[in-house]
Image (cartoon, rainbow over all chains, first blue to last red; front, side):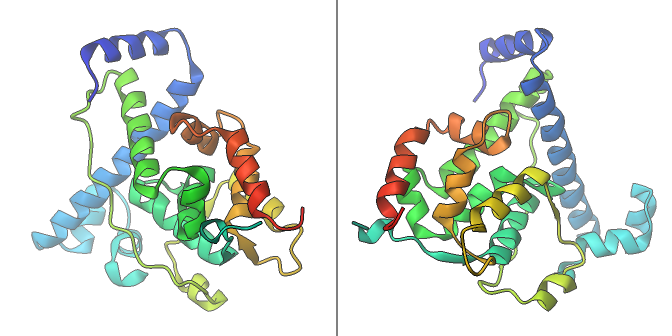
Length: 74
Length: 171
């Protein structure tokens, strides 16, 4: 668990231009976004959304969502 | 002399790649890097003994590093999403099984170099031991993700290198 002290210290690190943390943070955001997307696609499918609807919501084609998330594609 | 627990295990390079890919997928990465290769090496049971840490600890360390980095952006520890499910990987994958996977992830250049260097001395380039790959990973320096991970885990790299030398019969 991060305490507010830790967060203050880390924010100070970032404002002191530490690229090591800044670049890692950027990658961590990408990873977080991927996990959120995958979880949301899963729950949309459970709620009966079609691949077309999910693709429309994400702004990509039906095929690309299906290729990425269809469980049988492995 | 090689002790039983440190006996190296031969792995298939493609199996390491697929397993590293699953570790990357679990975290939401679109490429697998040296950090994911390191996680994949735990398939070789001797790696845990050599490093003195286990797979769960390594995964946890990566998650905490992400949390710290996100906190630096002002995102609190409540900002998180659970890891994604991993899929089983064959121990001896065929080229067809790999080509068929449409959603396989790409390797990072650093991870590719690690695998190439690790298998260089081998007659069969696709057969590599976890310890050979680990020896290459130990040569990396931060900000390489695997080097950062080992540092965060508090792994003493020179001590690990000594154990690797002791476990290798002829070198």
